[in-house]
Image (cartoon, rainbow, N blue to C red):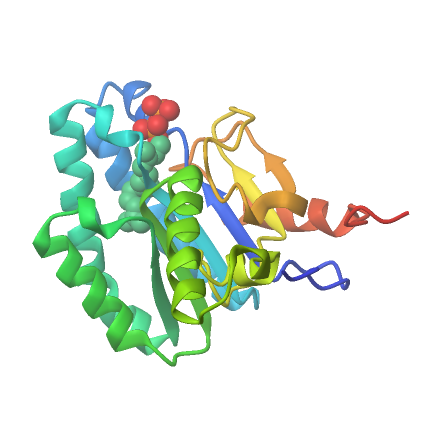
Length: 238
Ligand code: FPP
């Protein structure tokens, strides 16, 4: 969708928050404490993005594949997401942050779904920063859900599949109405997208750092933005 801005400032930054487990294990702590430290970084990064004038921030919090982790860790993550939403809602409202949820909510507990819906409803219309949390999210799963939704919408409009173009499809994705990510940052050394925003990432700039997510600092974020500003974005053109 969006070609980003050409002033070197990304309009939409998305993060693959990796390395919580390694951060904890290196300190002899349970992995759940790594996720808790990661939630602190979520607060910090959100505040930085807002102050830095980045309008869209998207965070990969729980993938459709993360269910295969030990039950204890999954439970701890779900609990952390739920308590984070409850604790942070006042700060989101105060700072004009709009919350959006990406992913398939049908797989989540009723309690968490209610908190997610309340967070979205109460922050609707806020324009300071749009914070999207991807929860029970997978890019392929999103594309399949979008394909089904597109078929339904086309049928309701009495139109055939030949009417399906990129714009119509993008409007059926969880990210409908948002610009594509300009910059995707992955922490903790791995260099892959892991099923994150696979449609939307078509022309994203990628930035990888060895820093674990709990250790990711404002200075690291600034470094990634400066590096982004040096990239020549061509979107397939010459
Ligand atoms: C990857 O680290 C991280 C996750 C699977 C979860 C990300 C969740 C948070 C940062 C916590 C809370 C989020 C919010 C929005 C409050 P890993 O466990 O795969 O680390 P490892 O690769 O070192 O094992």
